[in-house]
Amino acid sequence: MPTPHYGQPRYRTIADEIRKRIESGAIPPGALLPTESALTAEFRASRGTVRQAIAALRDDRLVITEHGRGTFVTPLRYEGGSAGSAGTETQRQVAADPELAALFSVKVGTTLVEQQRVTRASGSVSTVVRTYQLLRGQQ
Amino acid sequence: MPTPHYGQPRYRTIADEIRKRIESGAIPPGALLPTESALTAEFRASRGTVRQAIAALRDDRLVITEHGRGTFVTPLRYEGGSAGSAGTETQRQVAADPELAALFSVKVGTTLVEQQRVTRASGSVSTVVRTYQLLRGQQ
DNA sequence: AGAAATTTGTCCGTATGTATC
DNA sequence: AGATACATACGGACAAATTTC
Image 1 (cartoon, rainbow over the protein chains, first blue to last red):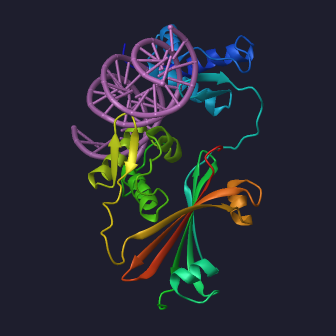
Image 2 (cartoon, chains in turn purple, cyan, red, orange):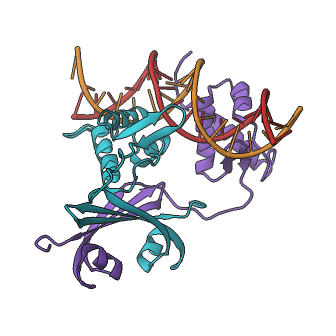
Image 3 (cartoon, rainbow over the protein chains, first blue to last red):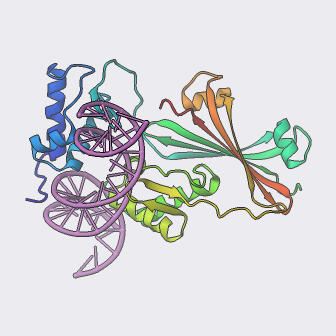
């Protein structure tokens, strides 16, 4: 009863079933999907499993979920990214802009070390962090 | 390709990466950490492993987890009243330069949120951190 | 305007089965 | 055999946004 996952996992089976309903037009674009609790009852799966199924559809941009409202079939088409993750780190030397120069009490154009960290989440860049410091030896 | 763990266990690697983001200011004090599921996706690790990583940060008092809310970076304990230390934090909106625009896949000039943290050590500025993110509104 | 109900978001703890080092 | 890690699944609880009464 607890957790056999022979062949296909349950959340995928559920996702596929909902996908069929969307692609067949049974649930048209813009329409509301059954609630998580309704799907839980229908498929006799836990809420977590149902949510996993919906997350799969969301990954495929097939549906859009709104907090406190529900999950809707995506109305229009979009162009999408891919996959991926991780962060990239690069280091370089840059000239101090007026603001940085003022902060560090140096002349505009003074060489600073800039470290840049790019964080990606699900394919797209979420955060860029730039850290500036004086070159070692300057002070 | 499932489970090699050379040298360091996976959860420790993940914890270290998150720690870096916190210490670099990418995730400032008081801010919400990505959810367990977001971290699961980003690091391609299982939920158990991600939770183990967060637990490690919690042990170090670096983050605080609240049931049903999320995990937050531990806020700094106040700044004394007087001279010096501590950092200045400012937030503003800036136009994306060509490099940032490319990273975020937006047009040059698109509005970004910039957070700047200035750290002072013994009176003078030691580090300036600038964090760039898209306006809360899309992607 | 306010309270209650709905619905999604997130976290907690636990469990089973598989695979690798 | 044991530690680590993955994927899956369950049930419960609290939080927050939205809708309904």
